[in-house]
Amino acid sequence: MSRRVLFYTLYERIWHWAQAFGILLLLLSGFQIHYPTAFPLFGTLSTAVNIHSVIGFLLVLNAFLGFFYTLTSNKIREYLPMPVDFTRGIFEQARYYLWGIFHGDPHPYEKSPLKKLNPMQKITYFFLLNLFLPFQLVTGMLLWSSTTLPEFFDRIGGLRILGPLHTLAAFFFLAFLVVHLYLSTTGSTPLELTKEMIFGYGEVHDDGAGEIYKEET
Image (cartoon, rainbow, N blue to C red; front, side, top):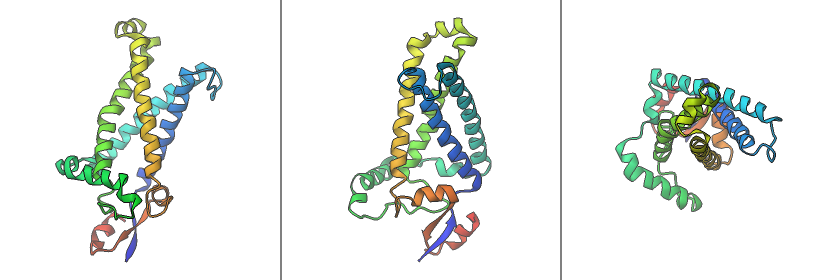
């Protein structure tokens, strides 16, 4: 027996889609900055640069608001990987994605409103939010300083050093986006997980933990 419960609050859904579309715009405008004649999606190069800068600052603000929300609501526990996640958890999840999912095996970790992320997701988001996102932010801010602090910009290596580093991180985010889109189709139906992130609600097995689920709704 299953029951319909709330997985994602309205704020979490708005935050997720704002971040997703923001990252997509950053990637598209970034491609035009690197390949202005082959990828003139936003018109002129200066327009693409301005869009890239504005969206970048808005995403930083959105990321800060998201961190503040998870911290004050105590939801940050959902994103913190435990030691077992780095050992047994990540290998069980990898085996499922590489083998079990194609052979009809059950998911190794039952999803619930209080445990929305599996071990691999927690580890991925941990490094994404604490390593790659700050790295991309810092390199982006340093590139932005080329017009405001040109001497400082040249002193730390200029475009020759910062450009490839920022681009490398951008390709990592692109790879993450592709994998994320694929994994979003691995629910009981291809659109199940996407609908959860749009409407907030999903199905869980009724295993006697109804009171826990009720608190989330």
